[in-house]
Amino acid sequence: MSTSLHASSEALHQRFSDLFARIAEGAVARENDRRLPYEEVRQLKEAGFSALRVPKELGGSGVSLEDFFYVLIRLGEAESNLPQILRVNAGFTELLHERKDDAGTRRWLGVIGSGKTFGASTSERNAATGNSALLEKDADGRLRLNGEKYYSTGTLYADWVLVRAHDSESDFNVLVQADAKGVERIDDWDGFGQRLTGSGTTRFHNVPVPQDQVLDRYQVSQPRRNSIITSFYQTFHLATLSGIARAALRDAVAFTQPRTRTFGVPGNSSPRENPLVHRVVGRLASLAWSAEQLTLSIAREQDALNAARRAGTVTTEDYNALDIHTFQAQQVVIGQVLEATTLLFEVGGASATSETRRLDRHWRNARTLASHNPAIQREAAVGNYHLNGEPHNERFGSGYA
Image 1: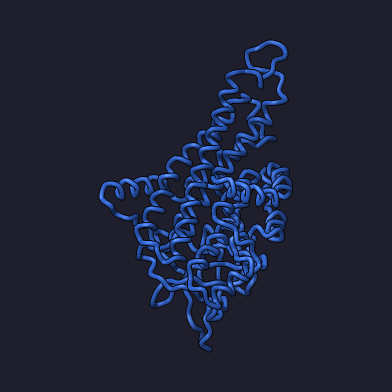
Image 2: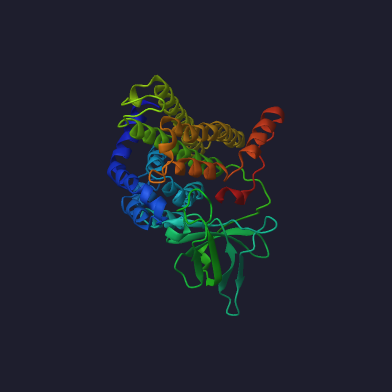
């Protein structure tokens, strides 16, 4: 990272450091009590975190992707549920950046710039992959939305819901207000990790949809091309995972420093002076650093590609290469963070497993995030690209999961 970019990233972090510290202070209690972080999300919105990538003239901060992911890693270190809650809002912001700069695009960027956020209702739990959310005209010619979605990440906390729906012609994105009549948001996410993300069921019962809230028709069966959004959504996971690795290092240090007992050593002893503990903490620090650097390297590539797009020099191969580089980073970062969140327990023996500390949440959260977009499929895509020059075949609608 260059000195100037490092300075801008650190300045951005300082802007949120007090808020992140308060968020981190309550993380264990929220996990133990399963208290959904409505207040913490509200504070992030009010502080402008959810609008960091919105242009300044529309109410945001207009930061680079590298700066954004740098500070996102630090939010993930404080509390890894919170980045995931805001992931779709950030992804929708990037989709808007890639759209034509017209009144509609600027309208929605302005909504995000005002502190409103978007949650997801795109994926379903059915016997086969599909999209059952239907947008139809009623007897008076008004559009009505009906259907059910699962993995509705962030929707419990959102002001708007981004819904993948279809009609007789194609799929498209529909935007509805989260508190609109007929919208039912249900807290039934039962994953063993990321327990507070609100990634459960959303139902739509004859919800009215104005025409200007129907966006971007597409064919879900077609691979997504010429967009950074697949890379962006995966990099978002990598940033959260990197934050978890930093939290594992932080908690290992905090656990070890005051201890005066060592297994197998009589009387008082100082684990912080034990060379074996030094090795564990050194490995944790190395894993956390490496995961972060890989994540930020992808962010820099995204910034460069966006600049080329604005200059009119970007190619389809540039987008394909970005996705492959992101998938390669995924293979490494996931393994590093899962190692770190297991290695953490080697600094303290059985006492580190106390539920009052909830150190297990780091592994559970990392494992859950790592399962969102199957790494084995991405690894195969990387191999096919290098062997045969084939771009990955991910479908348009799958990036929101």
